[in-house]
Length: 209
Ligand code: AMP
Image 1 (cartoon, protein in one colour):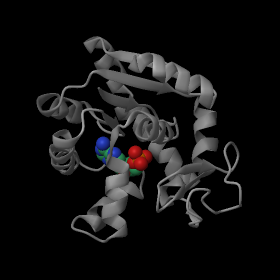
Image 2 (spheres, protein in one colour):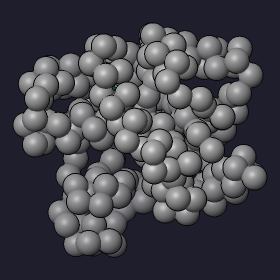
Image 3 (cartoon, protein in one colour):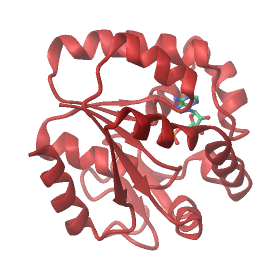
Image 4 (cartoon, rainbow, N blue to C red):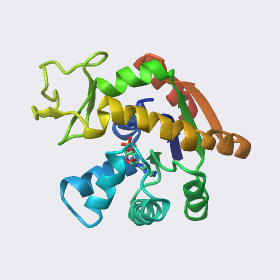
């Protein structure tokens, strides 16, 4: 099954991806994670990526598409279940993806904007295993430390309030258009992103059946 997760920053795409990876053997394509790795390791394009991401802007389509094509080429050889998280974010990216990859279902996580801000400001991540916590809703057992591997948790630089507002605006102006795009194609499933973890998993399991 090839899934695409659509939703605003903070709608829970990353957390849902963790569930799909650990319980349903999905391979994960997250452009945000790929870009952060390039920046952390100071690889080619690191400075260019930083200049967009730290302003809450989208990375240009050409560069994003090139990176995704490369990643998908590797993964499709090895995995049948793939979840796309944070890509596509523009109609141009969706059109590009259509030519290289067939999506079975699009899950749109719909979340109220007040909740999005709280989820983003409270988000903490483990750099090693990528587990996502939230200091308000799902804190680690020990403050600032990952339950899985004891690594220190970090806050994403773009989870700063002024950048969050830009990111939500970018989403509303651009990525939001993809909801109608996929609705028209007939494979969009809207899910309430404020459901409890158990309810969300139940819903996702029914979609996968
Ligand atoms: P995310 O981790 O998905 O929230 O992505 C973090 C940031 O990376 C976004 O705010 C964008 O600046 C950039 N980014 C991630 N995915 C894309 C994409 N598909 N197109 C353009 N920029 C992206």
